[in-house]
Length: 217
Image (cartoon, rainbow, N blue to C red; front, side, top):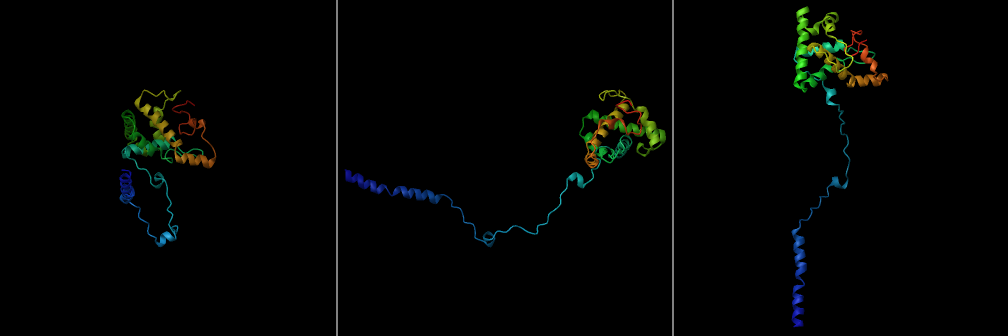
């Protein structure tokens, strides 16, 4: 009996390596990489041209896309009158504030869009009625005749006038100022001059200097 068990064990012993060999053969083996000259002597690429890159907003001029031609021209005229260049700082037109507001209003709530559309149209209509030409073509004296009656002194910025056109003028003035002072052009001018913005800018530099829409001077 013991001899029979011993012989049976000898017959069963080679089976285990055969099973392991079968499992190893079933596993995929990695293919050796070809020993090409490029692998023997790896080299870095040379004579590769370096292309200069710039930000997309510096490579092209933004174009109006929300206001129509007359409305945008009126907005640009307002920017030139309400916020001209001052003490080496760019004005609203130089800082492309009208272009920014064109985009901003395009994604604003309906009531703000209506405020701008109606306000720009109303200013243009007054100019055509009084001087028989668009608001954008008025000289400084003619524009002053339309704008000055619409200016109201506000002791607090949140105290907006109840009159729709006065309300629009107050808000567009503030929006133009904010867009200008947060522009790249303003930052570059400030860096070049070494002067930082001070709150005193809010009360000087406008063509109607004695009457600021926010602070009575």
